[in-house]
Image (cartoon, rainbow, N blue to C red; front, side):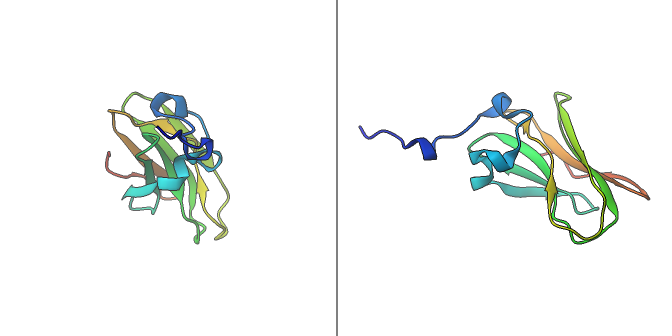
Length: 116
């Protein structure tokens, strides 16, 4: 039996991903956008890590805070100044056998994606 290279191993799984930055894990490698709020905030999901996070792709200056939350009450948010810069994202939450959503606030209100 061949061993799995360390670089191919999942860096976290489910609850062990909670609070980690997806950019510093292998979770970003297979991540996909599974739902988007009306303010453009994406819920990103990694099937291999069973974790989720919110990402705002940038390009406008009216979203000020993004948040990811799961149905267990875990949540992480990122506040930023607009200006049309690049993407911003939150830390991850466990999405193993539960659901999560991405939310955003701007000067006009608050909107969330559907649960996934």
